Image (cartoon, rainbow, N blue to C red; front, side, top):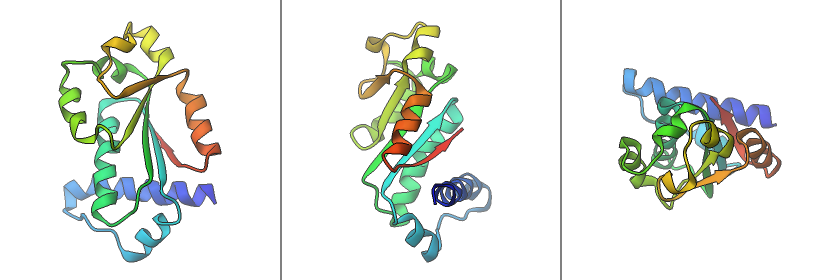
Length: 146
């Protein structure tokens, strides 16, 4: 069942990224109905392109009538260094603040010398990326990782 959900979410993400090329921005009724079976989503990302894509997918799902209760982006890797106050990504994130939870891997923060105070307001450090993804899966979230 989780594999089916992951496949559906991956299909939506692919549609979202391909829509800019082909102009398709509408999900069919069956896909929306399938996605309505759950309303909790988590996407694990490790670079800026996927971070922005995960936030854009939030908009895409809402625009297509998918009800979202919880939406979380779990971040690891070098992009963590770009999720600091005063960055371009801070401006990009403002639209989603209070709507989307952003969890930042503390291991990546340590490797990149990013402190909790450096992070964009509204972003939360977590012990590890992988454990958070597993925790969200255990809680019934549909999850994708990139």
